[in-house]
Length: 244
Image (cartoon, rainbow, N blue to C red; front, side):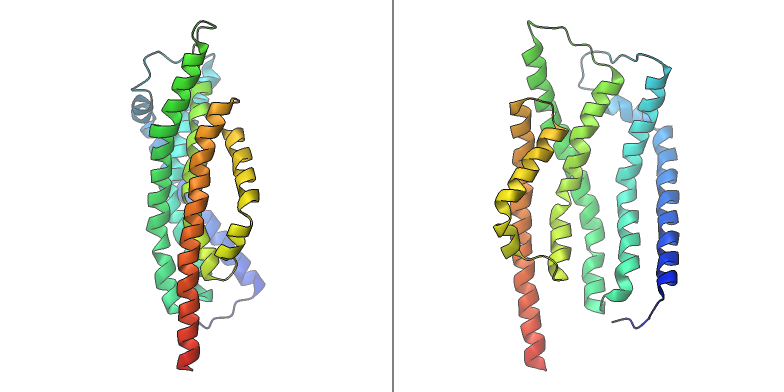
């Protein structure tokens, strides 16, 4: 393990520097996102066979920064992960440093997969269901702000939840979490996930179910990877004890 003791002030100063770096990276990607907002917008509405409305100039301003902001968050994930890894690196041994470094591309890939799953699977199905429900009742006209708020409220939480297995692996490796505890808390976790699904999806039963099922499956996947990591951790500790 890297032997380097730091005072609390030095830790806070390092944390401050890394937060500043994250903010600078986010602003950099935000600028790129603002430049390509029209292209991203065209991609996101290519399958929407109706025009989006803006109720005022502020809606256009909001739209630019909302699209650019989500783009910046996605692009900043690897950099944010690296800064977190660099901050905790002194507390890890060489093997843990190499292993946890692999989390950075995994976090980014899972985040993008979560966004893709939310955008291509969850969002169009929920939108189609709600559109079908409206037939014979009302004529739907989408405003840009409502449409993209609805889209991002579904896609971003899904992307974040796709990173849950990586977080579980890390917490299991450092001994904070065990698969036995996760199995014991399964019913409570399901309840919390259903509440979260109801908060990020439209206020009707089918949308809640369609959003809850992927979150529950991710939790079950997290239990599996936690169990695998826990067994390897126990085996490694036993080998170290026998070696001593």
